[in-house]
Amino acid sequence: MLRTVKTSLVVVAMTASTLAFAGPAEAARDFRGCAQMHRVFKNGVAPSHAAAHRQERTNHRRPAVRPAVYRVNRENDRDRDGTACEVFDD
Image (cartoon, rainbow, N blue to C red; front, side, top):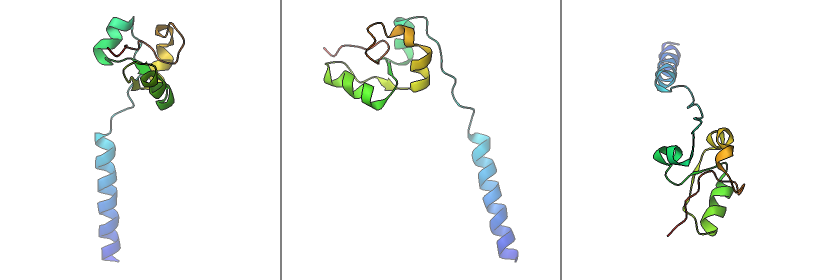
């Protein structure tokens, strides 16, 4: 009985400490343009790993995969290829 109580207290303490350090989900930031986005995401942003891989196959650098950021900044994807503010690989 005492062992079960100790185990339960340890589990509760570990869960509480994990929740205390886990901050809220990062809000998707709306960038004014590509220059501002490149300060944070230097190779642009893609909504999925498939879109990021497609950019690599078409001679671009691999963008960050952040679906929420892409949704908010879809207007920065001027060529509608699935990546906002992509960067060509030299």
